[in-house]
Every structure is written in structure tokens, then in C-alpha cells.
Length: 318
Image 1: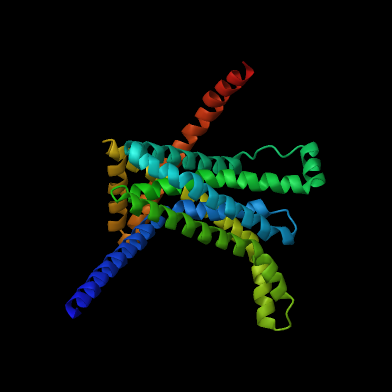
Image 2: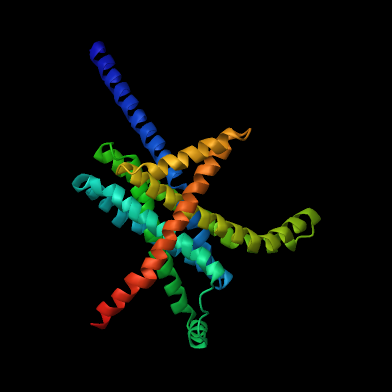
């Protein structure tokens, strides 16, 4: 009887060890996937606050909350099942889809830089008047636009995650995709909520009688526009760096290694010239990927404006 009890306890301990090991694997692989998607996460956090700009302070957090719920729906109801089906039916499509997503990121990054050089036309007075007259409709349009943008970025995040766990079991893939999807949504939109409300917090602090608190509050209010501009610049650079890096890695998967080797050689050579070689090497590699991404983005912009858009107009006309 006692030996049977000890055997049962030993089995339970073994199961617990397996469960703990599985949890460790999920955490490790989720962390690895999240790190690979860091550039997209930065861009997501940089882009989203603009969707709450121009609304009353009381509407800012509800807008962010609705976008966050839409983001979770994108990831868990659409992208996660789609990624798992893709892994089962056509795993060979993962790399081409990643490269297509990378090209989109390069296009978005290049568009933002082009906007700085050649600003787009401002809204017409009629459009501006409509926005003022119908704030509820404007809010709904902003939320819908944010969720659509999030879908593209979330798809890239889930594809990167899937490529990280492509050799794992089905349930491990599903768990890691869910953990990454939920975790990234919480981190991104939690950060966005803090960013959006930072100026209100700073204003409240600036009105306090205690001088150091008031001074810090004024610094926050004055510094937030500069912080948002810097965050937007970092997000743009991250899009180009991540998008370019994804395409370079995808080309290597298909045997086209020249660009990848050039990137590594330049990074190693730059790292060897500086005392903090590791950091410089990483920066050089990231810069190479970003420049390559900008080149790809420029090509996509030309193709979109002079090939894809005219063809779509002709198809719609017919």
C-alpha cells in the first residue's frame, strides 16, 4: 500500500516536472519571439497614440480600450487560427509571407520619410467641417482605422512568432502564439494609455504647491510633444530595420546570401574598429538592414503609385 502511494507521488512529481518544463519552454519561446518582434512592437506603440489625438480627455482611454479589444480579436480570433492552419497545411508559405509583411513595413517606413520630405495635401475644408460636425463618426473611423493598421502589424508579429516555434508541437505553437499575442497587446496598449494620459498627469502635477513636483509636471507637459516626435522617429527606423532584416533573412532562406553576407561583414568590420565592439556591430547591422529596407520601401512606393494603383483604377472603371 505504502509502495503504491510512493509510486503515485513519484508519478505526480514526474508530471509536475514535465509541466514545469513545458511552462519554461513556453516562457522561453514567447520571450524569444517577442524579442524578434520588438521593432514592430515599438512601431505599434509609436503609431497608436495618434488615434486618440484631437478628442476630449475623457474619450482618450475609451478609444485606446476599444482599439486594444480589436487588437486582441485580430490576434486570437483570426490570426492565431490562421497561423496554426498555415503551419499544418503549408509551412513553406511562412517565409514568403514574412517577406511580404517585411516589404509592407518597409513601404510604411519609406512613406513616413517621404511624408517628411513631401507632405501630403491637407484635408479639404468640407472634410474638416464634417469631422467637426460629427465627432462620434470621426471617433468610430479612427478606431476602425487603428484596428486595420493593427491587423497588419499583428499579422507580422504572429508570423514572426510562428517562425520561431515552427519546429515545436501543435499545442506549443498555439500556446506561444496566444501568450505572445496577449502579452504584446497588454504591453503595447498599456504603454499607449500611459503616453496618452502623460500630459494630463503632468498638468495635474504642475498645479501642485510642492515645487519639485510642480517642476516635474511642467517638464512632462513641455517634453511630451518632443517625446512623441522621438517615439515616432524610432518607430519609423524600427519598421525599416525590422522589414529590411526580414527580407534579408528570407533571401538567405532561398539561397540568395550575398546581401546577408555583406551585412554581416560590414557589421563585423565596424565592431572591430570600436572598443564597444558588440554594440557597434549590432548598430551597424541594424543600420544596414534599415537602409536596405528604405531601398525596398522606395521600390514598393514606385510600384504602388505607377503600377498597382493605375491597374486598380482601370479594373474598378470596368
